[in-house]
Length: 126
Image: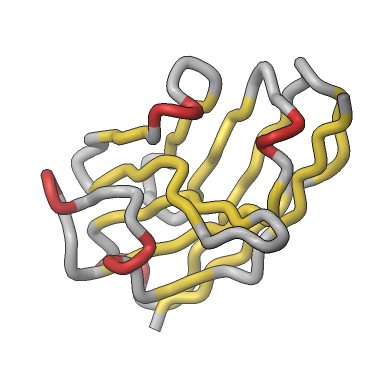
């Protein structure tokens, strides 16, 4: 099992920045792909970014150039640096991990992830 705990959410004005963190524990040595997702009220959960064990990164178009996903060398902490935030970025942000996807299969798609955190709220005001 892998446990995930997000932190760093909060309220900011449009144009501001936040940095989310996700601490992973448990059988983290077996994790091959991690990602950030978000879900706004009344909407489906959507992918934001993913990073695989070798550091290959993918972003969804809506956050390219504004968000940066990264992880520490040990691979047990995931980050999401969010700059130039917009009101439409407001959502509950989740960290996720999987042991069954890597390389080109490590995509910010909710269906490939098996372990999820509880989420951290990000609110961007105009």
